[in-house]
View 1 (cartoon, each protein chain N blue to C red):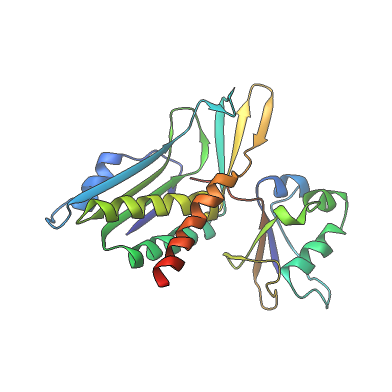
View 2 (cartoon, rainbow over the protein chains, first blue to last red):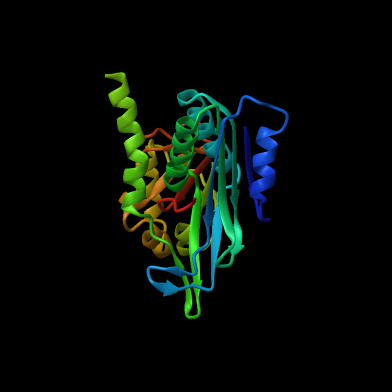
Length: 157
Length: 83
């Protein structure tokens, strides 16, 4: 399990290779890459700056990686989140999950992304020609994270 | 205890962190928000809508009714927008 916060870019292929090297039990690898869009709410942006809470961000992501590990039979996970100033087209976040079967890898990757959106202490600020603006949290992201709680309750019933 | 602010909460208050000693009777995170909001215009602005303010004690998310006794570091910030 790897969790990294960094300013620099990441190499998706290298991260996948690191999870699968030297083992033959992995049958599925899912990668999700979040990329900086060139517009926000239909308005072009010049850049995106990500602020984070050092110490808590790592701990919060690690907690959810452990939670994913307890919910699905995973063979490896990597989460890398960038911070600092990013330009349109730049990578923001990477989630890689490895499992024997695809359903577990897909589900764990989606679970981790839904929680990263709403629980990991990161804040996006967009930069436009006329100034900067903090991005508002989306109600849809809360709903997406919430449904994993519902799943858990249903499973327990 | 150390108080830390992030994103627009930090910008409105005008500093990333400070050391404070809240008076006796400030027992919960919600009490602390109400007390901070009375410290000046910039605090009142940052905490004008307490419902949107999120908090963490010693780097774990907490709700407004969480007790602050024994906390080393309390952070206030807007809803998160990472990922």
